[in-house]
Image 1: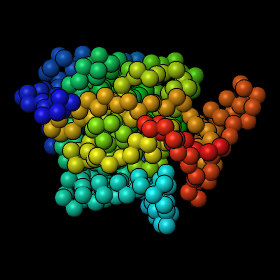
Image 2 (image 1 turned 135 degrees about the vertical axis):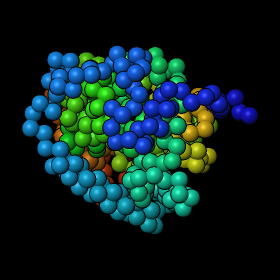
Image 3 (image 1 turned 30 degrees about the horizontal axis):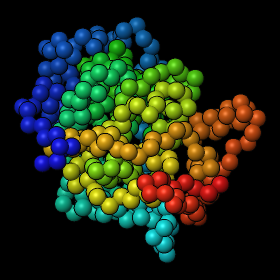
Image 4 (image 1 turned 120 degrees about the horizontal axis):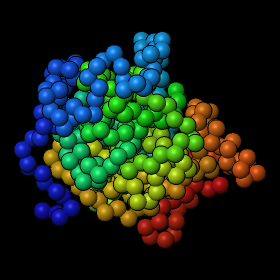
Length: 372
C-alpha cells in the first residue's frame, strides 16, 4: 500500500456516535452530549442567554426571508454554472484553461448520481457534491493532529462539510465560514460560547451562521490555523483540486492572505468521497490562483498529498472578471483599498461571457497565468 494512504480502522469515537445520532434527530438536545464533559464545557446550557453575548437571534431575524433569498441565489448560481460549462466547452481547444476542468467535473458528478453516491441536495451537478459517508470523512478529518491543534478553522459552507463545522464547534474551536458565494456578506465567526446544545446543529447551516455568527470585515485581526475546502475532484498524488467552477474558494483564500490570517504554511484539507479521487488533473494547466490541498479525507482513508503546487499569494486581479467583481461587494471594497494605498488602478480580467486566453509556461511544473 502507498505510504501516503493512511488507512484508519480504529473503532468509532464518541464523535462518530454523535454524528450518527444527528442524522436521526433534528435537535442536538436529544443527543447524549449533555452527559459528556468533554463537549459540555463548551456550551451554555441555559437557552435564554448566550454567555452574555448578543447574537442575531436577539434582533428581528427573518429566517424564512433569509432562506428564500439563499435558495434563490443558489438556484441562480447553479443555472449560471450550467450555462458557463456549455459556453466554455463548445468548440474549445485542448489548451482552453476552463474546458478540461468541466470535463472532469461532469464525469465525477455523473458517477456520483449514476451510482447513487450523491446525497441531498440533488442533483449534485454544479455543486460541491454532498455524498454518502460525508460524516465519516468529517470524523477522519477531525481526528487529524492539525485539526486537534487548531484554535480557528475556516470551513466552506457546503453540505458535505457540515459535519466538519459541527465538530469544530463541538471541540470548542472558532469556526470561520463565509456567507455563501460572498454575496450576502463576508466571513462570520461562530464560537461555541454563542450556542447551546439545542442550537449547535442549526449553527452549522447558512441560516444558523447568520443568526449566531459574528460578521467580520477586512480589518479583523485573526489567525486561521486550518482551512477546510470543498472539492468536486482532487488528485491524491499532486494535491491538485477542482471546485465547482465559481472560484469563490480561491477568492476567500486570497482575501485571507491579504488580511494576514494565513500563509503558505497553513494546511489546506478537503473531504470528499473516494470516487472523487482522480488522476488526470494536469498540473501544468492549473492557473496561478488554483488552491492545492495538503490532506484529503474520505470515508475510508486519509491521504497526505505532499503537494508541490505553489499556493496563491493573494487576489490576482488580472484574472478577476467584471461580472465577478460586480457580484461581490467585499471584493470591490478590497479593490478600492488597494488602489488608494498604491495610488494605482488595478487591472481587470476578461469577461466571463468569453473564454479567457491563457499563457502556458515553457518550464515543466509551472502553472499557467492569464495574460494581462
